[in-house]
Image 1 (cartoon, each protein chain N blue to C red):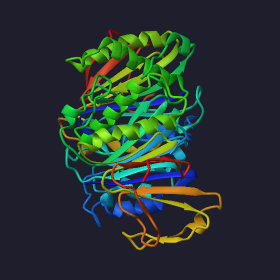
Image 2: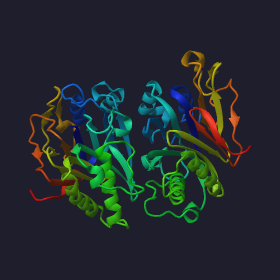
Image 3: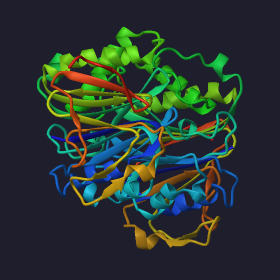
Image 4: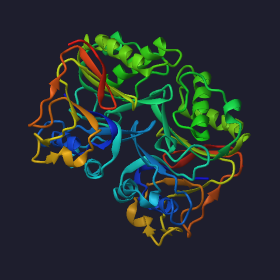
Length: 261
Length: 261
């Protein structure tokens, strides 16, 4: 299995603290040694760093942890391979264009019989060999079929994708993060937690290292930052669990849509 | 205008030396201060580093220069913006999937009347505001129209794209590098040079810094490495110029197709 990390914020925020916690699980405190990746949005553009090396040994990961890239939407992933070899093309997140936006996708879980259940047409072929990228291509294909014209409100497209995830859930474990740089959709079938931080800010300690942060020192009163992770990253805060088959959409740090749970 | 750098090699080769020369032109010895980017292929996967900051000031660029990532196909670009603001989404190279491959594209030049001359359909919309990304989307659209099934030999698709570049040349200055990780197509309308290095290897000195390299020490007798650049990067080697309206395709360091010149 793998671990997911996502962030949605109303002001450009660095994710160094949370990413450091995730990295520890990439071979040191966790078994996810088969690569890692992170995508930061800046406006309509985004940049990704990824490596098939364990994140705890990766020079590029250390740069990302050290160098505070500020973003309002981030998706990160550390991998413990099941389907698809330990190669760069199988390393999450995956990115594809859709209606003048970059869509970024990361998955934790494993799907069975996906090639038969999710046939793909021209233009929606995966590059690597993972069930994850296949599922992403299928979601994009559904999206293109449903919206031959760009939807007036992209949130309707995210609601549509969240509902379509039911078909993926039927094939196995499917925890997913998906973003266009504005919205961040978290879909859960087994394990996914979120926390929203806002004033008054407090202190937090990483579970996977002894890094303590005082968010009060790092933020202004208007900042709203939500973090989504497979397992809670801090030990002294209250994280919320998303129940199986449910989903949450964040925008600028706030929840803007969710299934009823 | 911008500057382009590409590499094609028969063994995974680091591009630190050539990239260092290019970086100097990104704000120090050259005026290209509006961002930079580089894409390295590893198998079917690829990874990009990009920044809207000048490359000579970019911490990420320094990592890329320091950290020898080995690849058989690389495309890099430093930007002096004309169309499209200095933003991440306007920073080359651009990457799009096509038939289970990542296609990577970078352009030097400027096109006029491209929106009218190159209409784009659904699925081929640019994300940023550059003429370059628009031209890339149009090439992909032509490719999808011409090859509704994957061509048996991808070289035929590269030959087709090279011919289609005539339409882009009619709109202005269009120097381009395009790769799928196997083939590297260099198309020239004003300025593009290449060199192929093979045994016996010699020494070379960067034009833009005092770095001298002895390729003999860095290679084996079987290595073949071609480098393509807007302007020659070294002062003591013989670079070849591609004439206006002509093109060359490299694979594993060797020329495998070219227009007659």
